[in-house]
Image 1 (cartoon, rainbow, N blue to C red):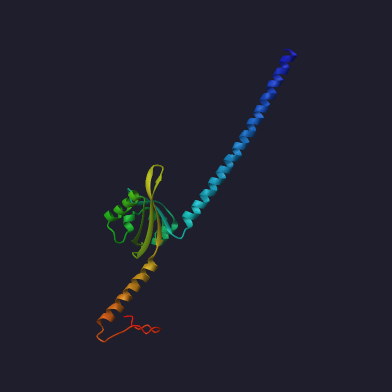
Image 2: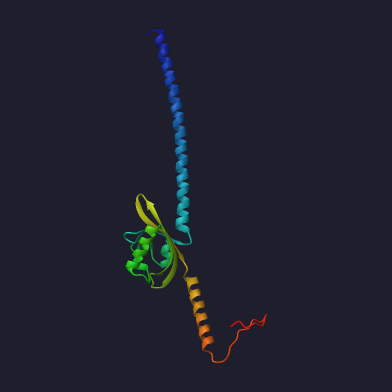
Length: 195
């Protein structure tokens, strides 16, 4: 081999080394970017899990075809007194206290058709107690599958208070109307007759 051939081979080898170094640097940058993306996805997953699992309201994703919960948080189970395994085996129609299966399925369908729905629903706990929930539902599409994402807010206490107030007003109204003597309500500041 001649000297010029050796030089040419050395030059080619050096050029290949430079190309290889350049490619290694590119791969390191890509690896760093990939690691950052993985880290960002892991952080996003942590936030999602924290919001989904630890929220004050029940969160339930329902399959509209079967009326079964396919994903739910622990709060939804606690609200109705079921274990996760028991809750997973239920249909929404199993816990509805007042609606028929047909009416419940129709309500689920209305969410999938309209995209959203907000309504109050009485539900039966595992122990048989009736609790009232405000449900905010939204149709979602996951991997081409139509589902209903629902947030269940327990409004039993406020509903009980409303019912007690309504009963009290009704009793007061009946007493007032049935009283044979004249009864007046007078505003103590103005002296005007109120009722």
